[in-house]
Image (tube, rainbow, N blue to C red; front, side):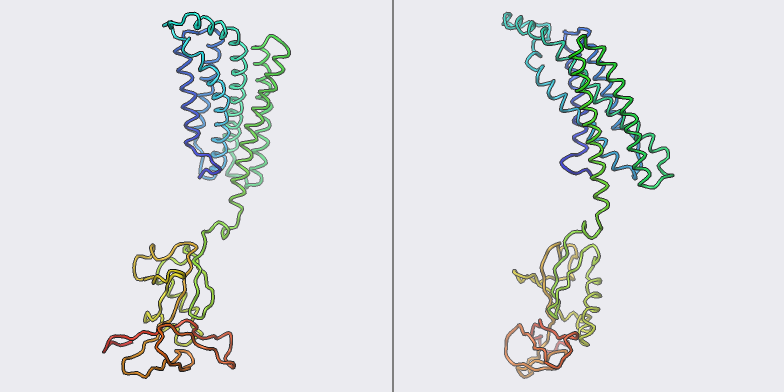
Length: 363
């Protein structure tokens, strides 16, 4: 599970982009030493990305792997920027000259003038991205060797220390590289600063994603659960339940029997099926004898009524199953009073539905 707008597909897209730009530069006839060096850097980056893709981490390191994918994908920003800049020169790299020879000549001259600066800057960025990926790969691999022998807190501190140590080594290598590609002190300093910013940014991305994943796992389970079904029972009490725990009609009946055991008649009526559950608002009756997966959904609001059966030959009076209080009328929905001397904790059925069974059928 990779969140926050990032997926493994984004990482694969980055790897494919690197391969695309390598192929494009290989096909160009403009293969100066600067371009050959750039190709070498891109190939090194590609190998590092392939290592990231194929790294074998156990399930306990999935957070580190998510963070590694995210950090490794940061190189796409530098690649996109450089790729967009050279697109206007791309048609002029081919050996087949266009009919607009003046424009071709001008573009070649323009490219020759800015080529060294553009490519050197891009090389420095690629070096920084490659270095950050190698730092993280090295840290994860070193951390995995003793992972089983450490608890999470000790492991976290060790991982951070390993990253910092390898980052210092990477910065030393990057400084040497930028000194080699630049002949001016000012440009060298600028490249070193760019490399340092990229390296630190990528490491921070890794750390932030890793911290977020750890934070998610620290959230109590009940916070992560989906919304309950908001259930109103026959005593007019709110009794929400989670579908993660109540997984069948039998489980729901068992819960209802426990909740209504104080009513004396409630459990037996549940066993007989003398109750109705309907969706509030729509009044759609929910048949729990059907496919359970289709009965309820998270956040749904439902209410339960007990069914009181009135026989055709009976008087138009109905007795409350709990207290035997009688009421008259022909309404299909009855609400029963609670007597003043009744124990409020015991309660009575507040939600009742009066039905007339067919002749000759039992309760």
